[in-house]
Image 1: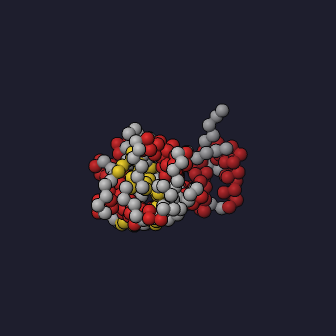
Image 2: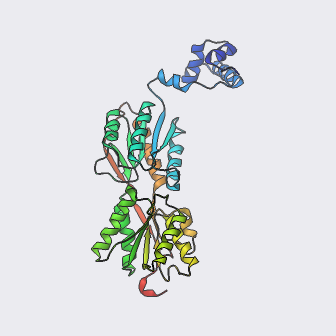
Image 3: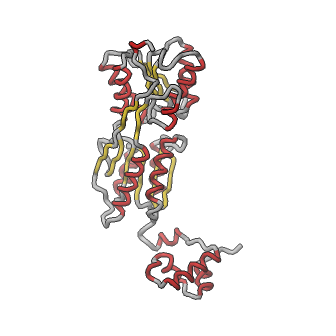
Length: 340
């Protein structure tokens, strides 16, 4: 089957290839009748414009590069959905790259995206290799770092204090009267490490000993992992009074394992999660959690990129926006003295 080109469209429409190109790039510069004739030829032939060639001939690519640490976690799915809902209707294509929680892979992704002449880069994270930071600064384009707050943003930073959120969740359990509080996590990425730092700070300030439950093998945070980690702790005979899980999936797994072993939540142990996923409110018992604004973060990041690209100056001034978080208290965290 032959490849349909601009020349084929021009021949069928009875115009020059330059006219077809003008219809595609600047439809408002030609008459409606001419535009309809060319578009009919395009539709009849099934012509698809060569975007690579168009980009070479223009200073614009209308692409935005997005780097996330994983495609497995629903947190980033909500974030990507928000980016698409803002950028695509504005005429931009979104190129998504998975860095797999590796700063080296992120560096390679940045090189690849800059090589494709993206007009902006949005990254879920603030920790980069020195070369990555250098490349992004030298590119002179909008760069948005998200999900965390940086002490040294490249230019635009939209996130929240993961450490403060960890402290807040831990103090919630402490003020309920618990002293033996465990911290459950899967892969200790930078965000989970910051939550642990907040947990440890709160425990230390209250005179309590930290107790960490984590996977000795690299595993995605999941319901199954939460179940496995709780089972390991149970078999050691070392049950805490409460558990702070770094995400709701781990918390749900821990609660399922409790039910399996006849341990009542919150009567025998209290559990709090993180992110306030959709199922948290309808779990049995309903799950206390820290609500994060990942969809709103994606929307704002995309809006800021469009605002920057709309002007003649593509260099975004250094700016930081704290999206905050909120503690959502539900049935899974009881008051220790109640003996519920």
